[in-house]
Length: 309
Image (tube, rainbow, N blue to C red):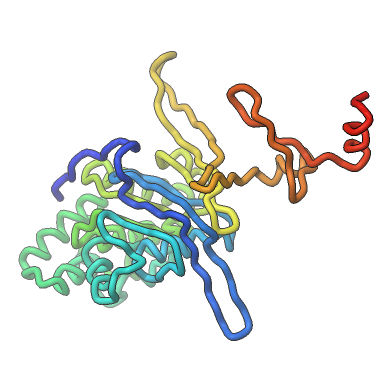
């Protein structure tokens, strides 16, 4: 695999750009809003994760980025491609060559009656590559995920971790610039999960492929550069991990609340409850920060009217 050019800084145009993104599912009797004005930026070559409770919209977002679902409104671009206006034929091409996808269920990633090597060859043969080229690249990919010795085995003859590493090789068969993974370690133990994430990290660094993972894994902060938390169909917080050298080598983890283009900010629920903040709050600019206070209660308002005491 040929390494891609180094990732640009976060100040350049993002590789993935979601702006005011909505997704609404409608039936005859029900309307479900899965995404509610979501904003997200991902740099080319970044390895990041999206976390959130069930129903937060994270899997919906991943399916939109994979070209498996279409947004209802807003803007979503991957590279130069606008996924809101892309035709179905172009989406098929996009899914085949520009994005790789790894499912949580190993049975959805691999064809059970083919060997690991044959599974990796299939996407390339469908794209018209010669059998010889496909075999050579399949061998290289399986070596990169540590499965050279298992290349002739069928999925039923491999462990869960080996199946997921094979699935990663399949997802990268046509050398896509984007790799998406939906709970790739959800059915694995912690040791095997570490192995799978180590493979993703190595591939990210060696090839420059952009990696976006949706997960419930509590250890994900230690495995990626950035974690974006989602709540109620929007991004609510970011956790960024970086290395500092000022006081000796070491990792620093910063957590931020996300402010979207409209100025919306989601305050963590535990903070709202601790301050007894209801549907409205008072904001006050104080030097270099903004103070958020509960709405004044009736007796508080009376004190304001007749003088503070």
